[in-house]
Image 1 (cartoon, rainbow, N blue to C red):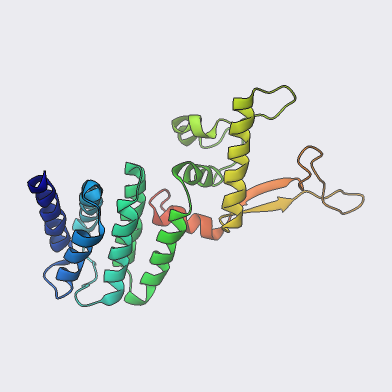
Image 2 (cartoon, helix red, strand yellow):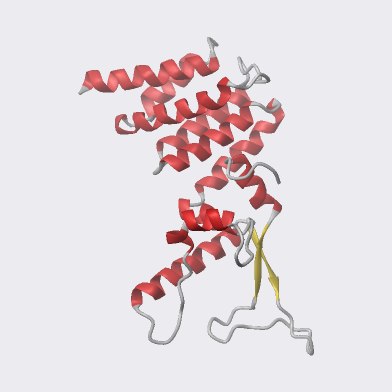
Length: 230
């Protein structure tokens, strides 16, 4: 088992070297992998680094990151989030952010570290709901909605609804509220035409309105590779 773990570690370090090249901080990255990544998570790091390598190989304008502390910090953060990732799609998102950050000016990397941290605040279903609000109209975005219909199937709250349906509705509402608290969604309130006051939902007591995705939400989707343009 030790030999197997050593082989995984060697592979992770080898891929890291192929991405970064030979540079003085290479030993630091190796120590990070060796000392902070649990053995059972090495496979995730290898998968993440492969995804990152595939994204960087076809780029001609990749910035030389030798001796550039900010780029190393971005890569370190990417590996930290990768070893905690619970799905392959999450590794794809992380690799996309890191790749995009490594191709920017050094002064821009803190923005990508921020986006990594912002992504870590969301679970995979919340990412899907965020993407849903990019095209929230009825009958739109059918391919995406069909692919993720298990997540996007709207739960209904009504008198006598089964507990499972009520639980699902509560979770979906919580997801949307969370996205709004993070500044990824906003609500356009509905106003009474006569009083010019917000209209409140009798059941929830909350103001009625329609949610829409913010520029920050679109930016996150773009950087994780979910959309191409803002």
